[in-house]
Image (cartoon, rainbow, N blue to C red; front, side, top):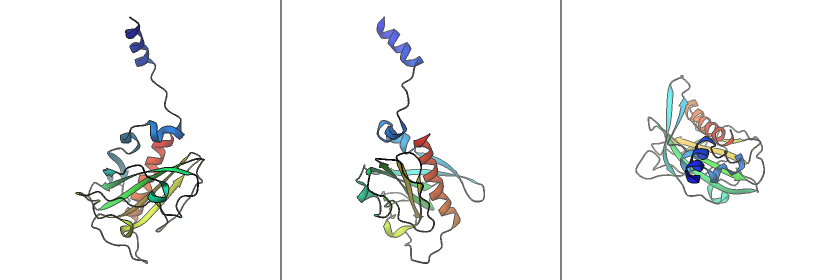
Length: 184
């Protein structure tokens, strides 16, 4: 009888959400990095960013470029997404911090997360030399979310290359969406 009562109470009284600062390890990987993230192109068309792969948890120094994360970074989580047309790819990095992150903002090709390639798909040629733009988003929480975005065809960034608005928007949308999911 007590097992049945406990089951009923558990169903009616769900477990509380973990505190924001603990979600990175309390949630399953699929909740931190969902298989698909909805977005909108500059023309207003719907875009879907599809998960190419999730990298193993890594030290911050290995996962981020030196100027992107300050001391106090506990660990880093990374995943790479491709847009539904497989034209663009972006690695999203989540830096888990000991204290609240400042609100950074940068345009162009800022110091950011190190790209992660995944074989057998649109992200297989994505690396440090292929990212064109990136975004860093912090808030009053203990996360810094960064993206590094480039082209799925493996083209290499050269200083002076212009970034198309859609690529910059993809980087911002992914960082903003995943940050919002973790912190709200």
